[in-house]
Image (cartoon, rainbow, N blue to C red):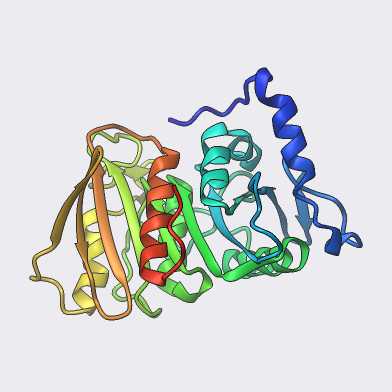
Length: 283
């Protein structure tokens, strides 16, 4: 699992890069960036800007949703995520859930209209940091992965692509997804016991995480891909299967580990999405 602490040796460099996160054209807005949150009416987010921004061109951005009871500031402190953003030349945006939770349709609590909130974050990023809304990807781990699946299902146009890790739909699974087919790159550990591939009951049997394979079947079935063979590929420690319906992509990548997230999986998804969209591929 990713580290949540920033080694003291990197503090000076981190604080210096954080200061670069406040653009001059947004001087009328409250300063934020690094460990200083950007505050909106219905929540907050943190942002790490890449060390070497390419001129004044609008930036792409990777959104990251933390796991259950998580803190976005821990993600923004993570050096692996910082290096990923720097290597790709994109902003890394860690969004904070209400009380560390996400309000997807089948969640135990509904504390915020998440699609509306994400839209307000996108608007703020565009105004404050000149983020290109047409070059964004939503990623999430565990509970954040659940939320990512539901955004992709309900309104895939919110983001250019999706990279959920260790989290799919909850029971009852949706019969269909009303949105256009998303570009979705899912990673899951075969030894995961927190969010098993088959799902598990929570709250004394009140709620149930969905089966990952059955979650993929929702999209495959409505695209007539129920019996279609998957394209198989291997990438590092990932064994992947993918289906390519019209206007989208569904990819399931498995590793032998447990409940964890690695920056390289998110980076891979961004590069794969970039190839599809015609963006420049970065190291």
